Amino acid sequence: MKKVLITLFFLSFSFLFAQSKISVAIPPLQFIVEKIAKNHIFADSLFSENYFEDYPSKSYLRKLSYSPIYLSLNLQREKSYIADLKAISRIKIIDVTKGINKIDGNPYLWMDPLSFRKIVINVYDEIVKLDNKNEKLYKANLDKFLRDIDAIFLSIKEQLFSLSSYDFYTFNDYWDYYAKRFRLNLYKKKKETLDAKEISDTITFTRKHDIKYFLIDPTDPKKIVDFFAKNSEAKPLVNNIFEKNWQANIFIFTQKIYDMYK
Image (cartoon, rainbow, N blue to C red):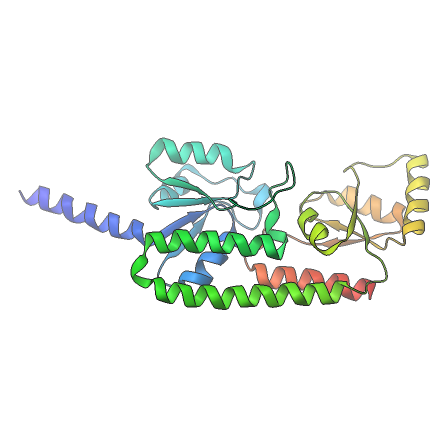
């Protein structure tokens, strides 16, 4: 009887612990949970800010599996880990991109403030389902967060309205939603060195379109970045879209663009 009571106690404790946690795909989603739920619900992220070089361990997956829900962005790297989570638990997988228009094959929609806003509302809905006792508090936090996002959107729009150039090179798809929202032109380049003719054509194109910068991720190969910078007359602008603090990241990214092209 004593063993049964002890078992029931730990099962109850585990259940309560699970109810206070949410597992998410990436740090920006963790940021959303923390902005809305504060210290009432804790979030663990499958991947760190070092997204492409992060390989979560089995023990860490076990920790994530104790949460009742997992918030997904349908990232390619999530898929195998989600399958593993399902295999070891009854965790519910929630797609927080529902109702958002997407660019085919591009999941990085949180770089558009208006798409991010919709993600925030979807996350809020799941938080309230999990803990409706604190709905009033969560709604107040949500409303403030949405006002902050709206202010950021208007600030970015104002800053980018009068740039001297709207053209950038990039190796990646990470900023497609940002560019589409704010009418920037991204010219995609392959992550490889250029031959003599390609270098000549690139320099001609750079001068014609007054391209001063190319957008890169911290994980882009340094050898390729240095080569392209040397042979394109464009300078690298680094941005990691997986940084946890979405507000600071997108604001600083925009400020850099504005300072470069004002």
